[in-house]
Image (cartoon, rainbow, N blue to C red; front, side, top):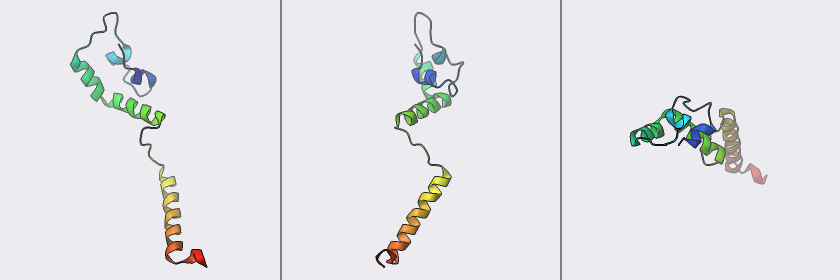
Length: 87
């Protein structure tokens, strides 16, 4: 047994984790090990990256893009508020 999400992103994953390495023949884990891995920061990074790649995550906009969008909205509001669009 292994964590498929962590194996998909080895640069983000904890390479020493037993769930990254996988088990031998029996594949038995204690529930505490699974819960610990699920709550680990490196696993969460892998999950977040997976969600972003699938389009389900919240990918933050770059500051420059936010600024450009804000300027466009403010300009459009000013034009509509001053009735410049009908002149």
